[in-house]
Image (cartoon, rainbow, N blue to C red; front, top):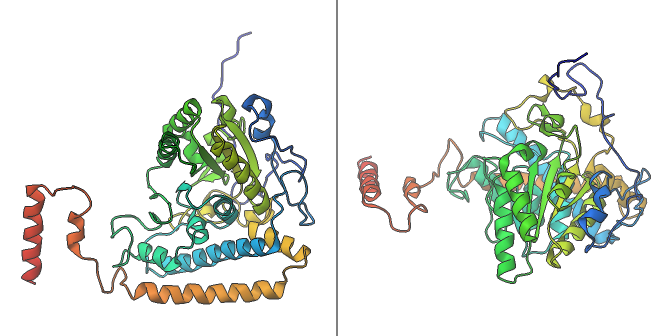
Length: 413
């Protein structure tokens, strides 16, 4: 008897009104995953794309070969960076809801992905972020008032009013411009890495995108070029389980891990607990050394969870259970690092509360400074002549004519 084939539609594990269901996750116990040499052949470590690198156990103790053995002062700096990122996000979320900025995207629950990686990299490494990597700016020392001004499109806006909020860039900090077009940063990072290798530089490129964006053609183009030319690049898939309202299974995560796409191209692929600061730091160190020593690129899948809405334009209660983050089996990155420091005897709930209050005051003062440079509705305002700059090396005649007409109109009042 011949049966007709049926179309398979990936199943979302839980919908509004259901209990959160994370039974689909493939987890490894902390400390059990082997750490290969950075020169290992891809074919000899394919299991890393299915296993999950974890360092912190349930008692907040570091275990296993991936333990980066960071000292307490550095861990406290990491905690500060992650907490500042979260406090900053919370403030900007409230500001958007009050109508003072038009749009915002938080990294709630994903802070370790950016902070741990940035701390494990070198200052000269070029970063090609997605729109949930504000922690990169925090680690590299950018004043948060600059990020606020970009969201306000005011006179201190780094993008001169030409970009949506959260589309930051920082040339001096080696952070490339964020693009609203998904996945474009992946081939850009590979191209930059190839150029660095041609020049004989030691700097590497690092890029991030969400698992949903891995369905874009740019993702595959980047992996192909990175593999063929052994580009010194780290490519990160931040699998926070949701691409706006679509579960990660619709991007291919139901069949194999996203990290498993690496070995298919001849690239090392690793899955890491994205909420374990120590694990993310260690995997980044490993991949960076592999890239710098000429052993090629690495594709890292960060298994994490988007704790909040995709953006201020999204309502996750329409497509997933409320409070589902409370049941996420890998916990919260800030709470886990805090627990680790407390277990070491190097932190306390009192010190954490004091740090939170200090950072909240800092963010409030930064906002006060940011609005002094203008808001969406209050002066000072951007110079309208800026629209004619930064496009042509020599402005063509028709634009010079338009600029003159604008100038005359403004002079007339």
